Amino acid sequence: MTKYCITFRSVTFAQKGQGILSRAGIEAQLRRAPKEMSHRGCSYCLQLKTVEATARASELLRQQGAAFEGIYQADDRGGVSQWNL
Image 1 (cartoon, rainbow, N blue to C red):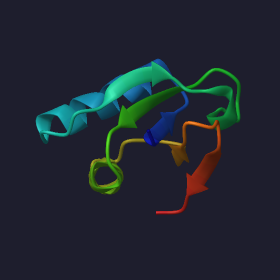
Image 2 (cartoon, rainbow, N blue to C red):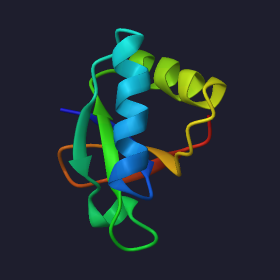
Image 3 (cartoon, one colour):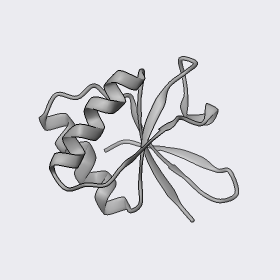
């Protein structure tokens, strides 16, 4: 199953992002970011279920001024790719 993640540099920023998405009705799970998605050591991510939800979430986070670091797609085989949305 494909996973979609929006990464943040700290748990505090990720929690704020999760609150923004929750108020908009977008479900996202807060998790430690996999090492393939962490460029500065320890980081956190919001994991979303669909590409549509991820695109909507990233736009909403930008509109609200939430500081996220990147958007990634990960597959079951361990492949990770970064998006440029």
